[in-house]
Image (cartoon, rainbow, N blue to C red; front, side, top):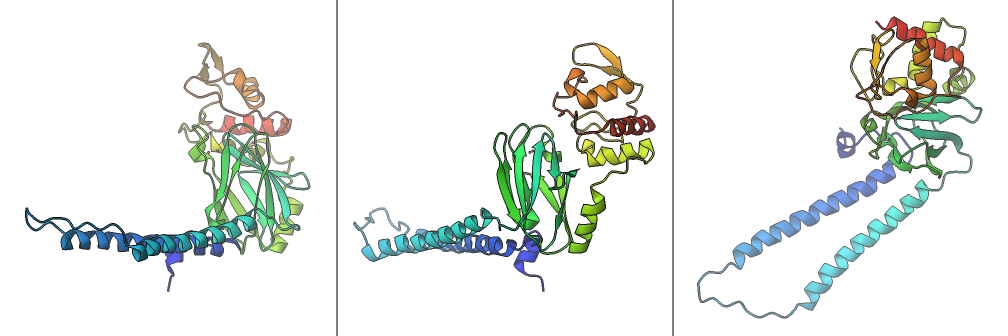
Length: 313
Ligand code: CUA
């Protein structure tokens, strides 16, 4: 039979999830019991002590020591339980094991980039080993974001000019959703990523091969790879629908009305410039919000993107 947790909570994907759930349920259930008890008492007293006639006089009662001690001490005990339980959880959450595998996280409006110890990167897909502690060292390129994985019951703000850290240990090989849980502008709700926990051997294999991009593949294919691996897909669709940025469909060769009132033709130069210096020519109706990809994409990847966009008629 499914437990309450399995029905109402996300999958317990990390070693710390059960502890978080236990405290959550304690607070939740205690709250419900108190709510029910107080509500029933209010209704009962309303009926029992209602005014029955016009000349009925309310008796004068100054206090009741036993009652007052009871309603002070019971909540005090409950709050101390929640505090000590929560504080223990807080210490666990903020003390990564010293042997944790470290991955750097960079948040930009509106994508997540992950950098692994050997220098490889991935965008919007975080690969981690299962059954091994992983520590994320996070910073933001622009505004405040927040990295949250409900399956792992972890969440931490990602802010500019300062590192924040987060750790977890995935307890099985599975894929979990990552959300940005701090409102960071127009593309906030699209700022999604996946954390993919792999078994030890798959993880080793991924470290060997997964980080390398095969630069020799045909340009348009490389472009299609780059479109997802660099995170272009977070803001640009390929089916005509406008997201945070303009769609790539039918882009090549079209006339682009710019914010300064001029127009330009979307040719190879225009696309390359938009990738490297996005603020140079912002299309009307879209916020000037794209981060520069200068130094993050190779020339061949940019050529690939141009080829890929050409094919999206
Ligand atoms: Cu980044 Cu919300």
